[in-house]
Length: 218
Image 1 (cartoon, one colour):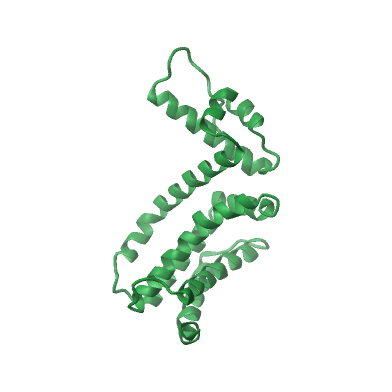
Image 2 (cartoon, rainbow, N blue to C red):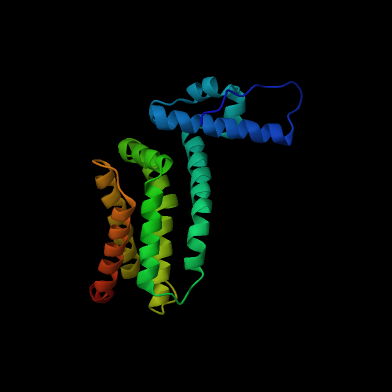
């Protein structure tokens, strides 16, 4: 929900007021980025919509990219916290069958990508990434590659490796990319159901496991 513009008060702000200012800036900027696009959102527009002064905004964020990065970092942390309870039980079972773990991970990723806020960020990055490659790099590193490294580490553990090899990392990238690409395409034409996500997660896990002889040998 978009918040009302911040109302400044006289005197030195308290810690709670400083936190409220930061929250107002981030929530206002996020709403503008997602509704107007990255290119069409200016720092001046954020000042006007949030009610904070230009000096207050620039004291926290030197430019639009820094502000967008702060928003992405905050939202990814929130998404990870929300998913932690769902994944904790699976991640704490190091001896669990790797195929079962991959199915669970795939399903968690697909469920996350169905969330309206995450879909909105994904759409923003896909649509404006070519003009603003820093956006694509930021989301790639903080979102996509975080999942890739987690998957590659679990695959390595199942193979008795201390760390992922280049081939294991590539396999994890293809696994994650397949899931992201599938749901982008399907959600573009129709609503993706729970059953469809479950079937896709199961298929991707089986494809990765059944193809181990090929990507291990590579």
